Image: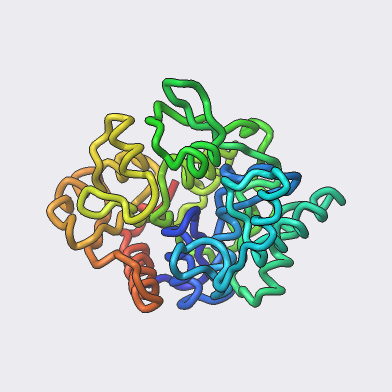
Amino acid sequence: MIAGTLLALAGGVGGAKLADGLAALLGDRLGVIVNTGDDFEHIGLSISPDLDTVLYTLAGIANPETGWGVAGESWAFLDQAVRLGGPGWFRLGDRDLAIHVLRSERLRRGERLSAITADFCRRLGVAARLMPMSDAPVRTVVETASGPLPFQDYFVRHRCEIPVTGFVFAGIEQARPTPEILAALAAEELGAIVLGPSNPFVSIDPILAVPGLKQALRRRGVPIVAVSPIIAGAAVKGPAAKMMRELRLEVSALAVAEHYAGFIDGVLIDEADAALAPRLEALGLAVRVAPTLMKTPEDRRAVAGHALTLAGAVPAGRGSA
């Protein structure tokens, strides 16, 4: 285990579940840097899918069947919008719509995304600090043989069916770590950094691509550990495994660790991948093997506990720059 505060990097349902487990153990000692590369504008609204997934999950109101959206959702707005000729491919529920409308209006008034997110957290009773990776807009573009696709077009409209060849983070050059992130990094009590079991390419990489952020995380000198999103050669949810195959990578926890090579100090892998432990240790990584599938709140807390134990077990000096 670690003392003090912790920073987690997250995006998507897997990252949100781990963040929920960490929040149950740490409360307001947890800060979560959330991917905003999948943000986009839709029917005049500013949509932040990963921020909202993490927020709804930590607030206990996420749809338990999908992992995203709000529980008990209804679709009257979307049905009427489609009837009037509007697009129906991105499903905006009636309850979910509220956050997009309010966020869009506040952004138009000049408020920062970080400040808006902090206010939503307070109003929904979330003690952990949710921090967008940047207040400047960054847009993930999926490169394919047929040309570039905005991420939500690839992910939702085309249901991840088109093979990928790479990724571009449009606007990343203008992005910077927020004051909230820099303050969390500077905190004397910071004990560790954890990368959630999120898609390495479109959830974690955009965060690490923010100019200066990856270097600042590494220079902080605390253990950095990752939870593998791949279990027994498959992704629990989402297109990570499909992307790895299309990029000609081995679909394994080992390949995930190699993707983060030189940045992380340790990796938490599932029991199904225990045979990979020696090869991971050969990379110089601390390794912990434990059940990592998060089906229940108890699972989330257990995996979070294993991640904290791993971070606490990183040998002295390994977490230094």
